[in-house]
Amino acid sequence: MSLRDLVLRNRSYRGYNSERAVSREELLSLIDLARLTPSSANLQPLRYHPAWEKEEVSAIQACTHWAASLRDVVRLPMPGQEPTAFIVICMDERGHESTTRFLRDVGIAAQTMLLGAAEMGLGGCMIGSFDREKVTALLKLPEGVTPNLVVAIGEPKENIVLTETVDGQTRYWRSPDLLTHYVPKRPLDEVLV
Image 1 (tube, rainbow, N blue to C red):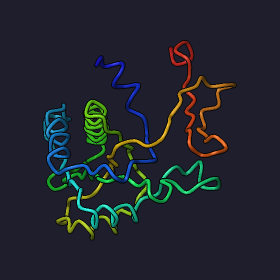
Image 2 (image 1 turned 90 degrees about the vertical axis):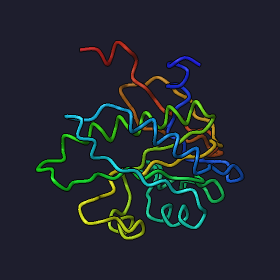
Image 3 (image 1 turned 180 degrees about the vertical axis):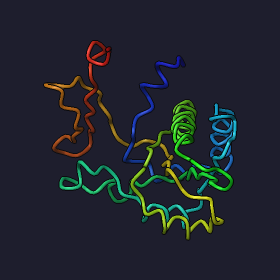
């Protein structure tokens, strides 16, 4: 599979096959990819928490907020289509005066894991909207280690269609039956400066 194929397959999925469990080993293989990615000044401050056991996955799910643009239309994920695993990307802030520089590391690590998931026939979604205090307590994180991004992982159970933007509108939407998610992308000539 080419890199372009992986990128096209790697969407922000908000519906998963609840029958397809994701194993600890699969999550560790994704984390292993992430640890090999570049890091600002090679300081490698990121830490990862894999969650695959149902109780913990449910507890993390309860701390997340999905698809803010669609909250008035539908609650996502729909009941019974929650992800079966999460990877919580944390930052070890101890000994670092400024952690802003490491936000790039978080994005690189998350995208790498999601491309790896796509290669495995899985999918995911980066979730930045979550209750950090509750996740910190749930994972019993040590002082100075903070959750920065929650990455949902599972077998996708929804159809995502990329469309071209119209009049610069980038807001995504759902079909009337809520089964297809449409994501407008700017054309190439519009993103060039």
